[in-house]
Amino acid sequence: MDQADAPLHENAINPHRWGDNHEIRYCLTSIENFAPWVRKVWIVVDDEGPDLSHLSAAMRSKTCVVLHRDIFGEFSSVLPTFNSLTIESMIWRIPGLADRFVYFNDDVFLCAPLAPGDVFVDSQPVLRGEWLDYSSLGTDPETRADPALFNHFMHINAARIAGFDPGRLFSAAHVAHPMRRDVMAQLFDQHRTAFMANIQYRFRDLEQFLPQGLHNHACLAASGAAIHGADDHLHIHSGQGRGRPVDEVWGILQKAEDPNVKFLCINDLPQLEQLIPNVRDWLGAMVSGR
Image 1 (cartoon, one colour):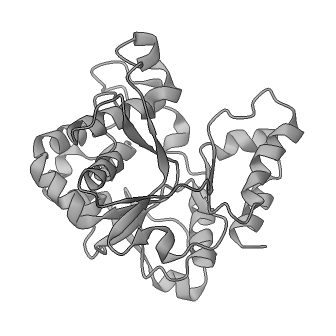
Image 2 (tube, one colour; image 1 turned 180 degrees about the horizontal axis):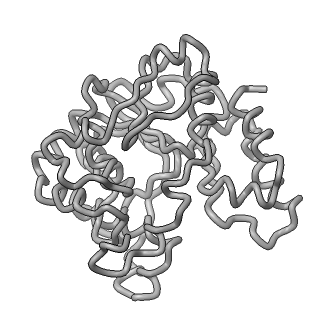
């Protein structure tokens, strides 16, 4: 951070982006319990993988750790990186990765059974999100500095590469993302300059694009994606509930107990834990199907 040439965006330097709050334990447990059909789980890390002792022997046997340098390969000069956008630009290069894969952030959990048809219909990824108009964001410095709007600009940049206008783009929900490896490989070949620029940033930057956003728009442009219309996901964003009564926060969180809700994203578990001290017990029960 001290070596940065210019001030870093507030969204890029929030410590929860690289702090280990053990979210991945809940994430992996949720996959084991609610998506047992998954053949292999790849955990992408910079150096050392997480403790997997809490998983069953069967789950441990199909879980592999892959290092940043293994997927960046000849582009490893950009490492080390602390930037999920940079890493997401290259995850399709995991050796042995399936042609159809589902990308999880460690703060995304399954909270109900997930079937293969929930993420792929034949070869088409099933996308969750909505069509939105981001044209009003423009170049206003205050808007661009707002950490809560950072992801909007990443979607704009991705959509533009795929030929979509900010006035109508598909904004992906905070869920697990079904992706096609061949689509990402083709995009890498077509837009190599953009990808090379994207991986140069060690911390998130407004000049970057959201790789899964580019993937989604490319699939949509080719009529190669299905949009899931039902509301089956819940997103608890960083700071949500702060200053509100605890009962109100619990009410929001417990929407995940609806059996129709399959995905739960909690962006800042320690912050939520300050409001609800026993939230980890609740989350552990949720991902275990109890």
